[in-house]
Length: 254
Image 1 (cartoon, rainbow, N blue to C red):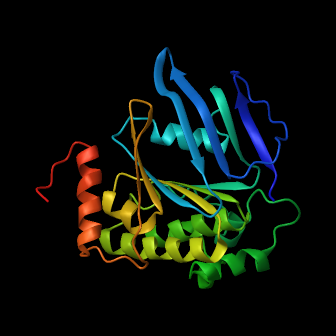
Image 2 (image 1 turned 30 degrees about the vertical axis):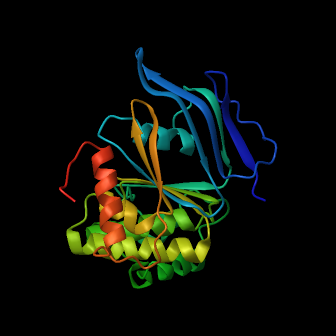
């Protein structure tokens, strides 16, 4: 099993020590995060099972992205207990590619050893963009750049993939294609996924379980017991979407 890392345990510092083996890629107990005295995450508990795809919904400012940053290790000023795999990767809404490095070099950026173009091209091929390996990032479309960001995350072979609004800046058609791509990659690689999104339909389309975050905690959880690929016109899909929208304070009339 992949090694795990305890990011904090009843302390405000990053311990960084090897944790005992745990059955879940993510185990969070009593997580609290405050900014200048304002509590954003308030005693939150969360588990994500191996290979599980979890989507996290909530209004802006509810703490979704803060939680993701904590799980990624980018935010360590926390209290509570957070245990995650050492092998994890993040893809953000902005692809964050370095414009002065070729596409393939962006994919293997930060990996140990010499940059390996063959390795980069293999993962670029997985996301359908191997032909652009030698190009500059500025020549890519928004959808292509996001594919490169996904390849950069997957090349690390993560046990946990964290996605922070990765499709938010894409047009509607490109967004649907990107959703299908992520679903295929998840099924192929078998890693656990936490997707932060504002899009209820996207959450129901992709996830095994959809969570709603409110007042700094997980306020609602809905399993998505629908066959894949999912039909957005399926009455069960429509009912679940309406239920989640109601949890978010949006009435649909369904």
